[in-house]
Length: 137
Image 1: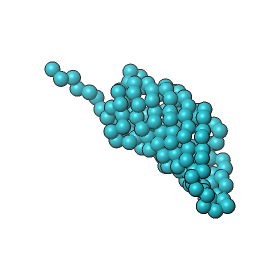
Image 2: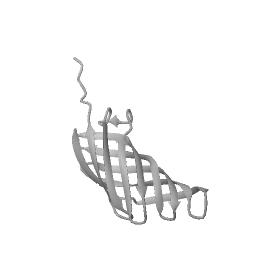
Image 3: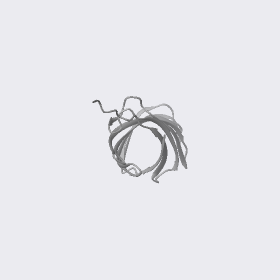
Image 4: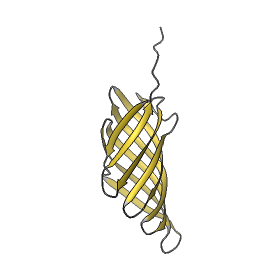
């Protein structure tokens, strides 16, 4: 299993309210993207649903598509995220969606996590396992 560190920076964050539930609670949807660097170099596209229970506190879930290069591997894979946030911090656990890998990431599996403060680059740690392709004679 490869232990990978990478950092992504959110360059664009589009959040729209899907449903106001009370004065302080609501459900929103987010589309965001930005570059990823470190041991994986490329781009991330994020798609989230956020459930606010207070003005700056709640839970979220969604998906991040990673498109990029890791060593000689190049392709994409999808990560499912589940996390919590408050006014200072975002915490997330991540799982690679089985069967989502393309190109050099075909068959990839794994998990990861991150803790970050709002407005900062996200430094995540991933543990990825790759399927080695076997050449047919």
